[in-house]
Image 1 (tube, rainbow, N blue to C red):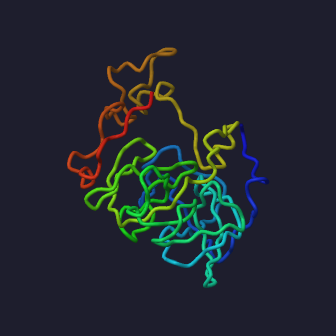
Image 2 (image 1 turned 60 degrees about the horizontal axis):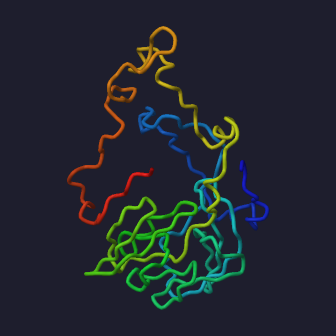
Image 3 (image 1 turned 135 degrees about the vertical axis):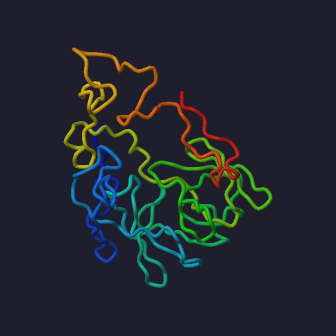
Length: 264
């Protein structure tokens, strides 16, 4: 599959102007203009949509007016109208359609899109848009088709299995949305050609062995040569590939129940 049937999935193609703004993208460079992340740059011009991840309209029902594509994220977003007249963009679950409603409340029913504190969500429920701190805004599980699962509630914390298979404790008064993020078929899409990567702001990746010795540890040699080093290295000569990079004394280590497992 090279594209999704957007005409069938979306209801609107022009964003609400008052909820968008222009912003210069960093494209992998720091404040000195030096490249800190390779293979980024260019891409189609885009406007940023102001997504509401705080969900501070507690107890006020919201109705979905549109389902839209957002160039800055993989899941679909929706323009919602609250009962008090406010309009906001939110990240949508896969099952909601135009005209459906959701509510942010401690007593909300367990239907997709509704938002509750973790302590009110039964074990086994699929959730997304998870907060790390109460009223700190959704931080976890926001990409297309992703979901986490509630495993247990104990001693003021809720154990959640994340999409990476890591099991993590989150304070039980943090909030989460019921369901899974929309656009689950996004992972099946093949870009199809190099030009489409450039539209997305992804620049080409050049093999180290195709470079000169001055540019990469793998560079040089007559004809096609192996990398010539026992362990893989970055272009700056640092050993990589299989080495742990997480800090041993990171503050969040005590919240991780089990680390993620390697994919086979």
